[in-house]
Image 1 (cartoon, rainbow, N blue to C red):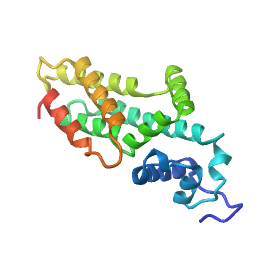
Image 2 (cartoon, one colour):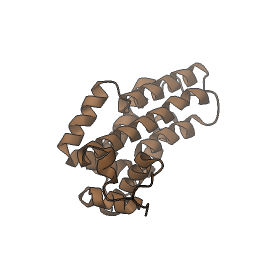
Image 3 (spheres, one colour):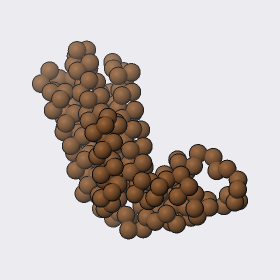
Image 4 (cartoon, rainbow, N blue to C red):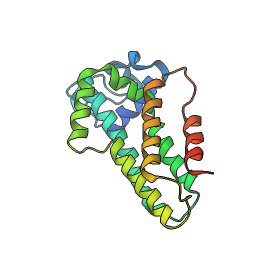
Length: 194
């Protein structure tokens, strides 16, 4: 545990990672500020020092994870012509579900104030599912031009299907349900081939 009065490095990420572990173990009902700070092994008031409350913390956690996934999707442009198209897409599709994704999305749904803050941020241009969808579509257009994807593949439809399936799986997965990553991996192959 960090001693009182000593700066805690990377506070946001430390608290976010701790929250994901709490969610994975106990689901949305287990997440409290005390559970997060205990898991992070830091002072009990640290979360409230950096966030106005648990709703703001949850919103910022979701927005941070959306931004990370959008960055990963945008990196697809650097993979055009390299590696397997399916494997490149699978990495992004799985990133949508990774890092506590289902549990974090489920948590946001249980906290109306956090859900509102997330929606407002997305409407204001924060990266989210739309940014991921656009990056996937742009990647597939580029791969189509190189002939690495079958001409029948519709980049916009595939992007929508992947992001829509991820959204569905995020909202219907919780601790104890089957791992949604297997379904996403199969979906990518079904949409673009192996």
